[in-house]
Image (cartoon, rainbow over all chains, first blue to last red; front, side):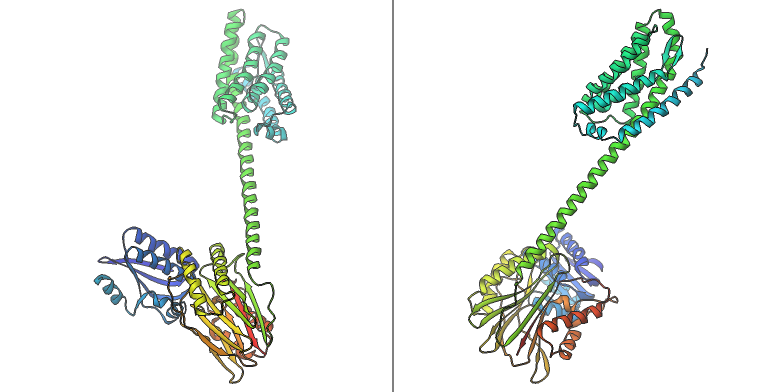
Length: 113
Length: 454
């Protein structure tokens, strides 16, 4: 999995490409942890290039969301492919996350808060 | 002069070769190991004293007489004995070599024999100062050079007449210092290597023991976890039930459970903890126990799982969660009342209409948030209806080209084989998965449960 990181104002944007399985989930968890440790609490994850997410991937997303909520931040998701959306859906996680069609919307809504 | 310096040196080096062979052989004995480990016994001490005493005497006989004095590597044996075995062994070997030399006579016999005894003693003192740790190659060589210099000084002080002593010292000092240092270098080098070799072997042994212990613990964990799964399929009049769990590693996060609720009612659970391995297994044990405790003797469905969720969430650190499907089978009503806590929807084959449906219900995985809503649904089971409960290890199993087995293939398999018994249905699905995945290793835990209405 490829992971790109950039900032727009106070919003950190992570763009993922590839499979989010048990192995790459650990990598993602470390990246998000580093962001939070460095004071980024508004994070948007762009799933546009992800065609598979395992339960380990969901666990990392949930753990990160819990941490960010505690820090009064948020984790927003954008550009979920149908399969990935379905995995979030089945687990009931679409109730927990704010999910956007476009990355721009997710970033803007993070910035407004 | 019978021997020029170079020739004298060559003769001494020749003798050193013998000592090198002896050194090698000594380091291979079990006594060497005992002494390295400081497991001193009367026996190994005596053996070392005798061996190094003999090395010292060999040094004397292999020496060359110059003006009535002997240029030799006699001190080498006692020095080494002291360095690796301490003062007792050093002094013992030194006394053997020294006393022997004393009785050979000659005008340098007093300083020469005294030097040999002191060589062993000083080696032993270094051993004590280093707290029994070998001084290393360069330290040992420096010690040998200094010891032989001291030997020469002793000769100058104690041998008479002084003029003869000076002659001898001028002649033999460089060959003796050099030969003893070189001998010491070879000896110390071989010993250091052997010490390192023994340490490596010890580390390797430790590593293997540790690995063995871990393997054993995982095996135990596997057995304990398997014991959490029901031992036997309950007898359900009018229904047939089968279940199987295949963890990807020794332990896993999937489980299924049959929970007795009341006469004619039984709870069926299938669940999947996020992640794999030991963390998932621990969370599985927690979740399974909580759900079981809440469900036993409670005919509620959604409230049981809601209550269980509050308890699980309180313990769910680092984002762990469990997806779970819970259904209560009413044997007399022939109904299934169910909730889905974010679990893959089971598939039902309706015999009457020959159609397949998902058992969907709105919900969320347990452990994500404290307060959850779960949609409770109920279906009627008619004769021939087959319900297949599964975890995502089934649908997400991949083949070489990373394609998933998928829900579609699962549904097709159920449809084409709906007349099979519950047990055979599980075997059929496993067989189809195997055929699809080929040699690709199982990546996730796989759990299947099949309920068939007769």
